[in-house]
Length: 202
Ligand code: SF4
Image (cartoon, protein in one colour):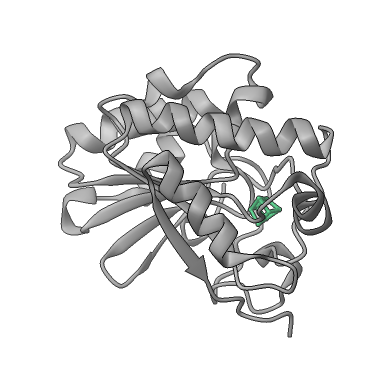
């Protein structure tokens, strides 16, 4: 039995769903490397089933948004995300957001974005860098060559633009990240851009 607080927790008016520890990156600024995290122990002893996830989520209509995130990459569990998003919308979720590393299409070896159509309202994609070299340094892709991973992230973002109402490319404030070059990438794609603060490795 998994602690419900590991799976679902709220910050402000957002409900966060933590569905996996797995990720295809090992970013230098990953929350998994911090002791502080978000104030909860989010390391899942095992991945929740759909029922466990929905039970932990409770009534989604009381939040402004429901966010699939995790200590890992939520879209490694694509089927879980789409099944849960359907149920949550049915139960009155106002908005569904996914925070992702943008590698879902190489993870699943197909274009998964059409499956998110009508389910996901906002997707926040970690661009992390202005080129594959910096991406390699900061995101340490574990399964793919940096060039392959970085171009997959860009291609994924372009696909998202076709199906998802709000697409955000994000970077973390970090040495070597050229924020203006990243902003330009987002602008050329016609998507939003956000710079996130690093919370520290204490
Ligand atoms: S992509 Fe996200 S979950 Fe994965 S290592 Fe990087 S920061 Fe952590």
